[in-house]
Image (cartoon, rainbow, N blue to C red):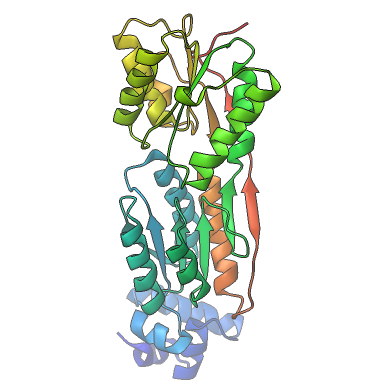
Length: 329
């Protein structure tokens, strides 16, 4: 079945069918006839032919750091909800937190036929920034703030402050498990927020009481062991992510600590793991799925703006979720 046959069955010209398929003007009466013929025949326009006509592929590249992350899966769900409804197909590029892989996929999508890119970023190096300066494909950054670029990002500093403000009500001796400070959002901003509240409350956070993990449950477990072997009197432990906090809870329970009576524990991210661990984890809820939706909407705006630069930034909100792993006063 081709466009000529559709035109013959509908009793209209080939040009009329072409205008219908490309959303040009067609009278309502003829629209109904053409639509009925297409539905009855199951006709699907050639994607290659559409691409030649519109110069659009309806493909969007999504570069993501870890495909099995609860955070990333929520963001991708939001992206997919919006883009698939607009007829786009997603190409997911999983980098396993490798800078080299991110740069490879950024180059690949820049040089091949995608209409736009969403880059779920963690660490933005000079190499990333240099490549982005030369980028000609519409691109939105999700998860990091970069001045002068369209981006959706979390208010990590405020999130960490709000969480710590709740925990200082019943905590006096704090420990913290962070991630690399090369990660501006999760590493640097969240630690700064914790430190700010503790400073206001005249609670010292000894540098030895800050351990650097690597986002994983295993690193949360290992860094908690290091921390409590050195400082067994810590009564409040905050982790930069829920996953590391669950690892911390596992070590503490295994070694006889009573949560939250002896030690209160909190993470950030409101992950599925934090809801099933016992006691349920106090955390910060980030609106990750909504963030994905906003990134997709922003990208659509960029792709449809006909090369008019758009440098929109959206800082998302958050909320503290108090559960059983903190002490009530």
